[in-house]
Length: 72
Image (cartoon, rainbow, N blue to C red):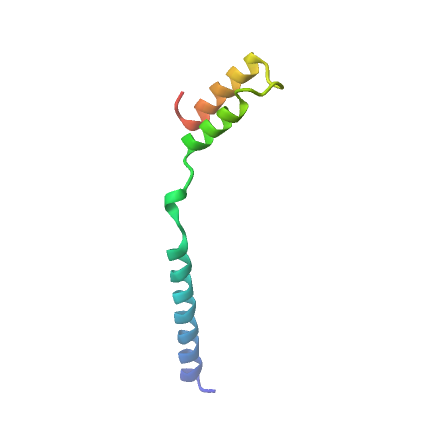
């Protein structure tokens, strides 16, 4: 196989890979991305009635979560 044939084959292979990558990227649904606020609210709501946390521990969880979320 000549050098130009190898190059042509490599280019065809790259084009195929790029087309596959474009299809994969197009299939990603970014509208469902979870925000930090969603994660924080989910964490807090799951721990509101957590009997294993004292009131003080829950308040600390709230403080820490708000700091991590950039709210406090």
